[in-house]
Image 1 (cartoon, rainbow, N blue to C red):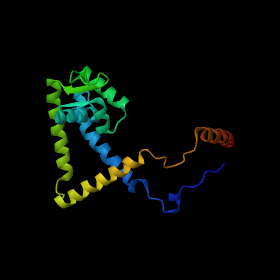
Image 2: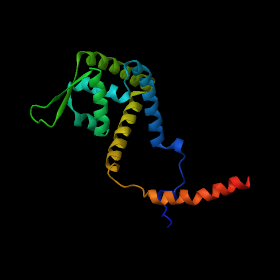
Image 3: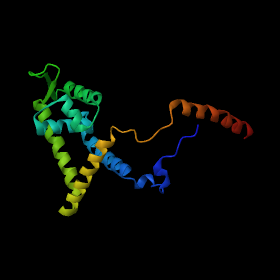
Image 4: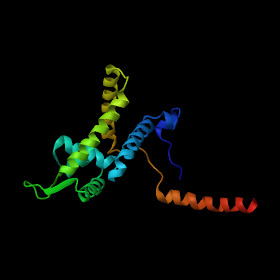
Length: 186
């Protein structure tokens, strides 16, 4: 059965390279690439480095707070914290108020590495804003905050009716004999 076209299809298509989602992805990937080059010798990634900087700023956080601040699933936060704990960069302890809650703090080694990560983050931040007037910076930050608020609303919505796995499997099965016939005729 044919799937109804989404409402957005009536508008001219915007090339991927011109979509805000892709530009944000590319900028984020470049920031991660810059950081990862520096983090490699400590076996960190941009997620674990940001966790260290958040702990530097906040002193102590619950694992759930880290997930909310980083907008990452709890499983990703847990694996990042496990790696940081194994390297003795963080301490984890049960909350005195609620035994189900795990609190995270930096160790002395974690504190020093968090300071390094923070300095790198500040250098990249400053380099990205270099020669951009304060007014444009304020507009950009305001724009990104509005976008973040809109995305927060979209997170819980079913925005597009994707083909089901069964439909795609059927399409793949239907195509297989066509490819085989083409190869035989070549």
